[in-house]
Length: 227
Image 1: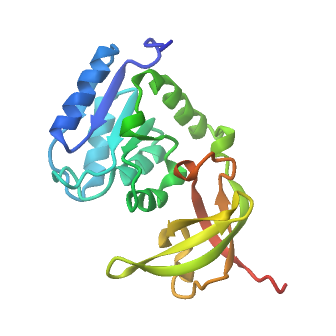
Image 2: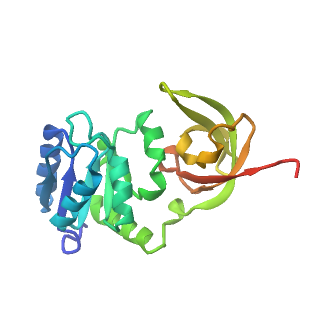
Image 3: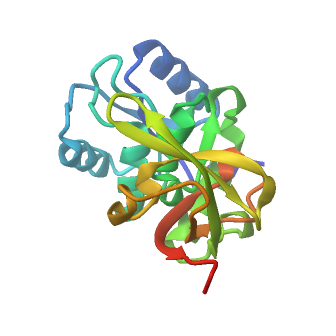
């Protein structure tokens, strides 16, 4: 049963007025006091974060795509990752469709809760709040605990006009399953030299149940298999 005494106020960040209003109504049905972020912030994330802080809500729900209606030029994933640094409990709503998954993966280590819109359930908000607080205190749940493991590059390929992604395998997670990761998962000094067959050490939550829950970060050390 939802403990409304622990979580009563929720801020909603969504550029789509129809989706935002529907979410606000659903939250109100569960007894939450809702506050909304409106306006146009362009690239000024500092101002948006300051406005969220000023609302002093217990929890923040943020849509991933904030650009279509020009609320912001950055993504919800970038915003939630920033709020994580400020210890503001937040979650990301998304459709979980590529390339959104690849885009979110850039920041996934700092986003404790990502939920698809079709799976969102207000009754779980207290659970999501607790997950965030646990990570702020350095106590992630097992499925979010990072492990230093080997990541093998299967292919490097173009992505967009001037970007690239890599298909990688994590043998200690799913040895027969390749996932697509953005270049930002790798240290910048490797970007020009990544090649098929390269192996790196990185942080991966290898107890993640599926790809949507997986994060990969700090691929900062290349492994020479001949050593």
